[in-house]
Image 1 (spheres, rainbow, N blue to C red):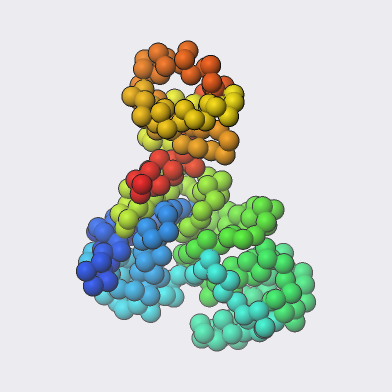
Image 2: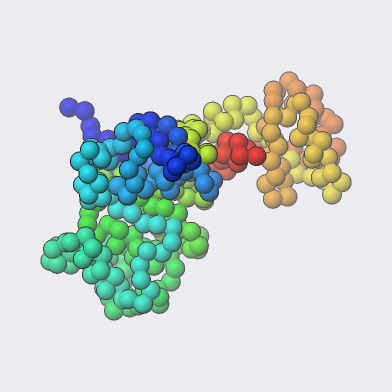
Length: 308
């Protein structure tokens, strides 16, 4: 018997009038997978997630979440998923306990089951403060953890996290991702969007969206290999005058792409022989070293480069 996929989208298209926000997108997500969904603002990520959460019906195509499609209505899909948005989803002027009670009432959970789940989840995030603490009095990282716990209250199979660590400290982000990995290890499927490329490294696979289309889907290492089959180099200007040469270098036939990274530049050669010929002249103005591509390099090349 074949395994039921956590998420299945086949030729998903979503239109608003004449505008196609999502165009013929197909992908699958396995149970227990941490699946990254990346793209620039306006790429179609949020619209796709709204469909997968049962909040928006597709214009065309087939979508199944936990084995359930829209032919069964949206409510069964909603029961399968938990959702945490990039904007904080709890109420600042309510206590932690009141927020959980409100979420429980929205989900129509039995009070005894909800109380047990609340304690399990607070233990899971190692929450040690009084339940009558107002949410506004919690540090940002801890508020995000409580928000995650509230999204898990009804024990969903698939958890959608939309920019879950936006605006919190690096230490809080690391702790939050430790919780995500624990959730995946327990069998939950995690579908996450993030603008932090170091976080995207934790994903088993990553889908890249651009202008409503799926342009790449692979593991982090697979995306790096396919995007940069040739070596990548970092150029550090030896003087301010070297920077004046950058527009000229972008037109150089030996260079496929040249992108700024702070005070340095990352260069992808068009071919190794052409690059070797260009090196002696470049070394007068730049310190040059070979580097391994990062997901940020991939994102800039495929997503931002395609939008320019």
